[in-house]
Image (cartoon, rainbow, N blue to C red; front, side, top):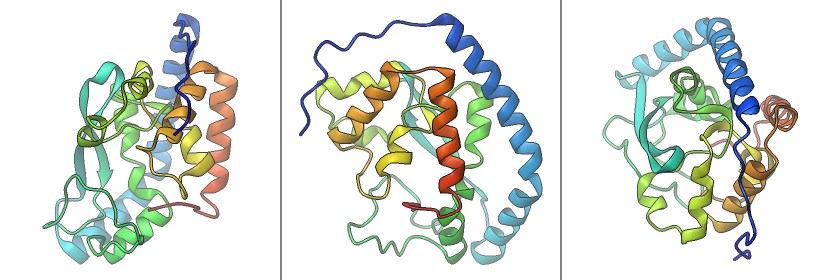
Length: 204
């Protein structure tokens, strides 16, 4: 377990938060328009294989511990959707055939752009975790909830394929990201995220 970040200090940068909100809204709206045909095709594929609903909503922990409903395209079978960790061997029988492709290409994450427009999430920030896992956190891990959760973040572009989000080591990455937050740092993470989609490492 990593040493908790003693001495961590967070100072709200109003200018950065306002600029980030503008970028979030502009980029999310543009992206949703651009990928609308892809989402419609994915929705049709989901319905044809497993019926409705197309969207999957799940309670996640946001900034300051506030719960919100996070949106995804449904990739699990209707009868087994719920809060649970994926099997350790990576073979998850709950996932539909269409869902495997959606996850591999991270297409199932696109509806979270609506969360960004609502203000529940930002494009770049700590990934929001399920409440039952947050209840198991060490006290210092709650530091990650100082920031608005993101669609992507340092954990995703660094070790998503090798380290579960609830691990303390992953939280240490979140705290590092919060400490050095800036538009330049966010832009670098977004670039790395888009680049990783071509090889889809760690998608699940």
